[in-house]
Length: 453
Image: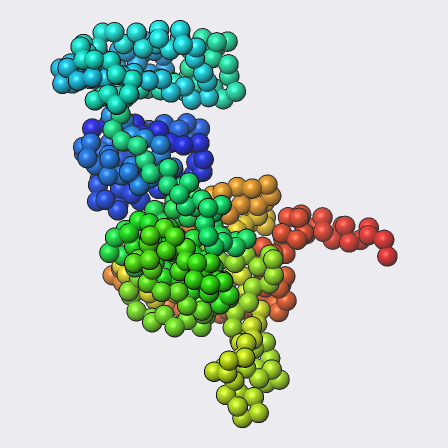
């Protein structure tokens, strides 16, 4: 059967990946029949109303789903399709109470025009009571107007759809998880909408184990727990994990939402010095790694192990002393991306997903390519664009060993890894471009040449 999904007006490149991921989560075959990035309407093929409800009930980017009765470029075309495709369904809606609604995307209608549109469907043999509140059946006319157009000055909308309401989405929970209402956040906490979407695309679900190695205040583990997964999180900065007291901490955030039973644990480490066992036990990894803009990227370790004692000083074991603060050394941005992929390769179950956010310049000459690994298949790349740069949500699937190209894997493992330098800017191309205003190298050199001495 055909269904019409009405999406919200945000994050267009994330819409289809989220819906497709939810179809995987609930085990439903779904086919995209028609979708346009410029439109909030998507026509899909699903086996039943129950399947439609199961998919949309935890979608963040959808608003609702409707049984698709017809689509036309004009109102007359719509009526012709409704009569041709759905006449066999009409008897089942003859007696129930019902109402008609109008959703005019990018436009508006006067009450008189609304009534005329609704009356144009008078051929439908519905004899039940008209109830504007809690009817048994809810039918909606969807109009798609040209952006910025004034309906009364145009002859007709670009497209018209008609459908029977099936279910609303979970979009309202964005407000529940709003960072403004959360007890413990930081300047880098991921907003609730994108955190919940990321968890959906990563296939978080009951009975699964999810982990964020850059957890901070726990936005991603909390989002995974909302969908029923057991969430773990770690961070190199123990202050962000511990917080300030029981309530203002990552654990306190889980308690705030009644999700304490779905917090596996939170601990302090970095990705290159992790206590997580290298075993294929994780169902998903999702994270927003540091971009190295506020400060250079770092990992635990000594920049100069000989002259900077790390673990032992003057014959004393330092690491287990209460006052011990482990030193940190600069970390390459590119190496971090490789390390994330290798960690996922070592710890994800077959078909487990890795979803992480990665920044890049919008200029193709400064763009950072999507990292690759022979054991990880790219599922989808979604983009959130800003002015001169964007951040991408890259999602991978851990290939079963039987599907891995062994020749490519051997070549990958034997490749030479070279460092770009030793300073924060040298080790992080995104940081370098960011502080140069994403100007080309020629423009930067020109500015240096003409600068006064």
